[in-house]
Length: 320
Length: 259
Ligand SMILES: Nc1ncnc2c1ncn2[C@@H]1O[C@H](COP(=O)(O)OP(=O)(O)OP(=O)(O)O)[C@@H](O)[C@H]1O
Ligand SMILES: [Mg+2]
Image (cartoon, each protein chain N blue to C red):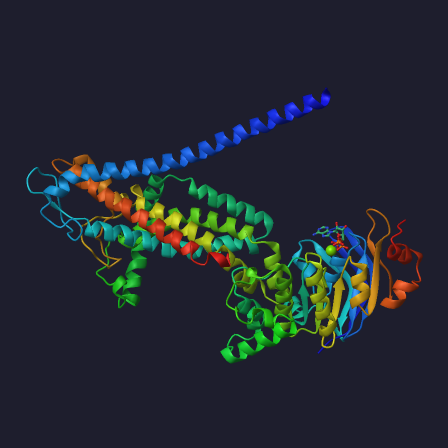
């Protein structure tokens, strides 16, 4: 009698677990589909809404830099300078932030005494929680002022490099300032990701390097950095995504102009996100639709960046 | 090339915890010395003090002396990095670098000392080390494949190749076969017998037959009791330890009787 009881409850439990599996699988699948649907929905919205102005556009949207869309007749606008500015600002931020983030993460994980490491880690997390408008205020109220003399110095000694050619903006509200503020903004997220992958490097790999007579730095180069590479790239791409889409800080710091300029120390350039934020309130005529078209380009750039990142991460998968 | 190890009055601590107490022994060059003893008696701990690997563990420290030939490896002016180049180590779990090819794994340690390495020179070292580890024939056609693509036994021999590529004088092995099948184990044991012509070898093992097969000298460690430090009970020629040990404790352990 007891045995039959046991076997039936056993079967009931098994069945219930199977039901749980089914529910979970369905839930996971549903969420996956939902994400795809949202993505497709956003893309469809952007395409539909921008179609109106793109059809009426007199200029080539992809190669033109002018922005004359707030009209009902013959708008002519293009996203070239905006796209360029967006990518440039994000690239500056990435180039500045990634090495620093790796350095901080290495210091926290491998060099700092445990107490200091904990405090530093906490500070980094805190930095990540600061709203971007505060970064913008800090950038325009303090950083830009500090940077102006530094820019003059850069121009004097490195002006022969086209990037740093004069005349230097006296206000400091330049592409480089925007890039620096963006770098500070994305630093915590890259640091946090990098620190996490460094912590995951198995003890056995580290000991393997040390047992060969590697110094601590050699051990890091041999065992830690190669192992952490996908994580570092992932973190950098997360940061890049944030830098590409960042609005407030850039809108506040950069004194905008719609030109394609490599001169980081002169005023000029603008990013898509900041442009949308600044123009939207006054948009009339085809204006809104044109801004949505710019948004579509930003969407495409972000998507492309993520796909490239995925490709890079997975390229040497069998070695991971 | 092979060097003698002279340990005297060595204590090993983890923080305040005394893990190994008062070990003295001499390990002859060109011989295989096996450490046996029950779990937790400090074999690994002691082994790792012979190339200062214990210093990787926070709080671990030693008192006493370890001489490599006549060099005190704990002298204040000695860099642990130099010690580890001289005294190589193979771990219980095969641990090839997962991001490196077989080739790069072998040459990794050698490159640390010799930045500018000609390709032909590197090829030669890789072949010599892989031959030395009895692995060359199996991998010579796929040196650019990841080290992790090999079987466990092959990976362990790859780790041995990596260790001997830097031409150490001593090779420490902590249960190098415990994660391997009997065939791979035999391959490694054969290798150990060959390697002892050129190196001083110390191996920790839980496999009594293995100790009897490969070693010239056996050292038996035991715990004085739970919570007490591990101690060296007896060290002597393997033959003697396994046939007529001097201590009752050793005999009990060898024959499988405890207490
Ligand atoms: N990292 C550590 N921190 C603190 N105590 C440790 C550490 N590693 C080992 N010990 C302690 O030191 C003692 C010896 O451990 P050890 O690993 O050397 O034993 P062992 O003889 O190698 O055992 P096994 O045969 O199971 O490998 C044990 O009491 C263990 O708990
Ligand atoms: Mg052990």
